[in-house]
Length: 193
Ligand code: FNR
Image (cartoon, rainbow, N blue to C red):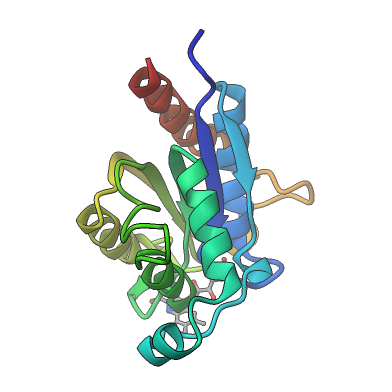
């Protein structure tokens, strides 16, 4: 029997009430329903300094970099929802990618990314839903050998988008975000065959 695909899900936002965290949780549920084992993490639990080559050289890698790299390596794919900051990727997400892309002891450079498959989403209180940031996230992930699914979702007016249980008020949006999570799971199942 094919092993269930493993997916690591996280948001490129840190704040507690983050609508990107809510979005990625809905996608994670869709992936679970489609047969994946999904681990949802909060990047706030893995604080990191801004990447600095002197820290790497003089102090070695922060423990949280190694923890994140191990988690990424243990999973087949990523579900990522990230805010757009000034029309691009959030600093939190870029910093995590920068640290975890590095060779770290036994872990080869890009080992956390090579051959992984990702589905990307964004949520924003604005009308475009953070869509412009997705182009940069796609570009960055693609250049570090992540296969990014063509489908992506931008949730506009995100501060009004969720009910108290963290589901979308709009049934269609709930279905679409769950479907994106399910698509990732289904593709990983096919790849694992
Ligand atoms: C933003 N925000 C924002 N929104 C957007 O749609 N396009 C943008 O370019 C920006 N730029 C931007 C820069 C900075 C520095 C901040 C702090 C915010 C607003 C942003 O979408 C909003 O804060 C979201 O709520 C962030 O997502 P979470 O925290 O709800 O996940």
